[in-house]
Each structure stands twice: as C-alpha cells, then as structure tokens.
Image (tube, rainbow, N blue to C red):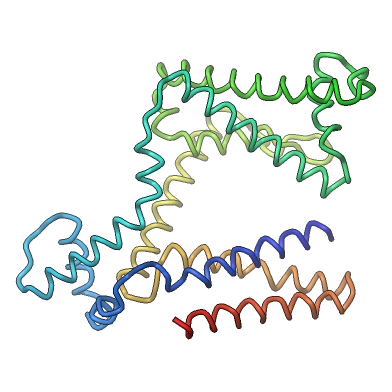
Length: 284
C-alpha cells in the first residue's frame, strides 16, 4: 500500500505540473485563435510549409506559419540543448558514468526503502559484499562507503566499455535508448529470482529496439495530429492521459484497503490542485 501512496503522490505532482503549464506555453493568444479558426487541412498545409520552407500564398498564412515555427522550435528546445552539448571525451565518459550510477543507486535506495524499509547503507554494503563477502554487512560506514565507490567505479567502467564497443557496432549509437531498455529488462529479476525475459539475447534486443522505435513514432504522429487540429499540445495530452488513467485504480485500492479518511483527504487534495490552477488561469 505504501507503493500505491507513492504512485498517487507522483501522479498528482505530474497532474499539477501539466495542468499548470497546459496553457502556459508562451503562444500568442491572437495566433492561437487564428490557428484554431483554420480547417484541419489548412493547418496541415501551413505546418508543412513552416517546416519545409515552402512559399505560401498570403501574408496571413505566412504569419501563421511563422507562429507555428516559433512554437515548434520552443517545443524542441530541450532536445536541442541536450543533443547540442559537446564535451571532451574524458569528461563525457566520466559524466555519463556518474549520471548512470547516481540514477541507478537512487532507484535502488528508493525501491528497497519502500518495499522493505531497507536503509541506503545496506544497499551500499551489498555492493561491497561482492568484494568482501558477508563481512561487508558488519563493517558499518566504512564498507558502505567502499560499496558506493565501487558502484560508481563500475558505472564509469561500463560507460567506457560502451564507448569502445559502440565504435565497432554503431547501432549502439544510433539506437541507444531502446537497447538500453532491453538490457535493463534482461537484467531484471522476479521476486523468485527468475529473469522476466524468458529468452534474452540479441533477438530480444532487436525486437525491443524495433518495437520501441515504431511505438515512439506512432505516439509522436498521434501527438502531432492532436496539435495540428488545435486541440492542445498533443504529446502533453497523451502523457497527461497516461498519468490520470492510473489514478482511479489507486484511489480504489485506498478506499478498499486503507482508511476512508485518507481517501477523502486525497480527493480534497486533487480538488484543491484543480481549483488553484483554475484560479491562476483566470487571474492571468
């Protein structure tokens, strides 16, 4: 049940963020009204012209295309910033290893704290146990620090290995996210200690890469269709729907397994968030 409460809390945070920025994207209100007044066919034609640089027939269409291009560029800015950074090789490998190690150990600490009330020092000592054995759990802070150091050393070594291997197999550079997810799934174990992937290997990795790439393209296409028809930010609405869809089941679990007071408090929290966002919108 503690996991359900964490899921609800995270979902509410994301819900509040999306509601708060839903209409705070910086678009000109006049441009938005003119864009919504267009037919779906005209929106598609102007959007394609804005991206390809094709000539348009009227000054109004040129202005609409310029507004669309500004919005499209703003939405792509985070990706542009992330992919446009160029660092020296040594710093990039060190940063990649430290980032991967930090995310991995943070997830492990949060997961086991929620599931088994396990303190972070126990997680660190379990890493050092690979070197010291059972004596690691009796060494206190010293073995915990050793385990944390070993964890980051392993992460940096994996980043270095990935770099050298990717120079030979360039698919690791072209499709790093799907292959990384496939590797993570192959490494996961069930509570009984069994692998959740029955047949690990390159067949599963290639299937995961194709599936995730095709699925991402489909979701992006659906989001673009929603945006072009003036309904709203398509990708934001899809993510928003996926977050909100998990709330009813979690609320039902709270109602059946926890106190009714907690259920009422969570409903009041949701209502308060929506009310605050509406007041902010109306106030501006």
